[in-house]
Amino acid sequence: MSAHRLKTKALCRRWHRCSELGEETISGPTSDIVVTNGRLVIGPQVIQGGVAIKDGVIAAIGRESSLPDSKEVIDVAGAYILPGVIDPHVHFREPGLTNREDFASGSTAATIGGVTTVFEMPNTVPPTAGADAVMAKRELVKPKSLVDFGLFGMVGQTNVDRIEEMAEAGVIGFKFYLHQTIEGMPPCDDGALFEAFQRIAAVGGVAAVHAENPEIIGRCSAHLRAHGHSDVTANIAARPTVSESEMVARCIAYARAAGNRLHICHVTSAESVDEIASAKRRHLPVTAETGPQWLWFTEVDAAEKGMVLMFSPPFRSEGDRKALWDALQDGRLDMVATDHAPRHREEKLVASVWDAKSGFIGVETNVPLMMGAVDQGRLSIQTYARISSENAARAFGLWPRKGSLLPGSDGDLTIVGVGAAHAIEAERLHSKAKVTPFDGVSTTGSVKYTILGGQVMMRDQNVTGSPRGRDVVRA
Image (cartoon, rainbow, N blue to C red; front, side, top):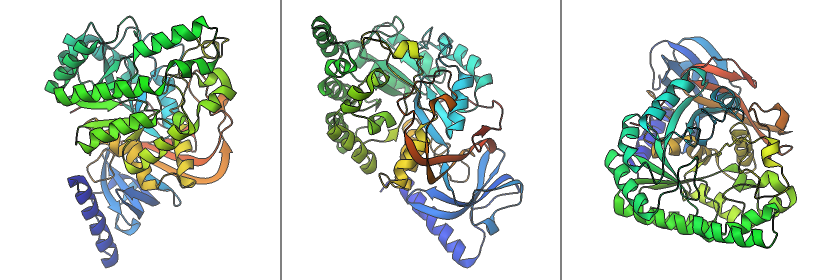
């Protein structure tokens, strides 16, 4: 059993023992805010009680009678209190693409959606591909952000030698787009990829990969286009599951040899899950994410809904979808990430799939959808706390500062509930671009409060805080 699980179990045992004796639990001084009458999700336990926060960090957890006095008290009426949700894969489009999104609009959507920390992808204009770009982006977005954030650095064929300077500049990880040229940067060939992994190992970083094989995709796409296939199913045919699973296996092999930590983005297939599970059985430092879109939709839905479900990697079979749910529950997949990628209707809903842009919004709808799945019994609330926060914090070097309700952790809370069904309405979402396949989808999950560093940033679906986001900077 891991040291963390032992520590968490000891914490829960102490909480129960103190509750039985009527003593103070893990406590601290007079606090700035106390959240009461909730169900705290701490490791394997769900505990009735509350949280006290002082000077931005958790000062105490326990029964209401044991918590310190506070300037502000919030009664959450039995809602679940989770560690602040982390979305480790968003595109807030700044700099250079702010007609689609910027950090003000994106972090507003995140806050309304219960997210307290995001990891921002580097495929902007210019790309975040050197220390100068990292620092410029940090200065640009920090005054606008309602949430904490980490910045990825981009690595391609031409800037492998800039990994060390980006690490020094404090990137949360290094993103590899292995499927195509992005913003003028060609993907790494095998030699550059292996060297990059070695360099990342030397600086203690994480390599995050978009794992698709460009040669397979290119040849399949050319064949389909030549034969006049242009609907959304052509994108699925151009990206068979082997184009993903082969690249996942290749990256795992190089990471094993190089000794670096590896994170697989947006896993979509059972084949890829098998490759990742094999790496975990060998105790390799490999983590992986999937997203709500692949948990909800299949290739059948894509054929019915059309271009709104143009996404890379694409939607798979019902068997693949089931494998993703099972892998989240049993730990073969580590986390849920939205790949929030705003697109306007004129970019997305076009006649030919070859002209359509991949992606759509998701940072605001993720938590309500996943809490609806908890309500339906697809996941336990304990599992959801792990895949929505703790595992991302651990994978990217932020635990227990993030992803934890332990005293001393950042005072980030996502307070959620389940209840009456309600439909997602695209036009009421807060991103600049409103295109989403979840428009009209019903869920019973809801976000009650978003608290960042002890400050209430959202209550009752209204932003109540001002920009205070910090760059978390990987330790």
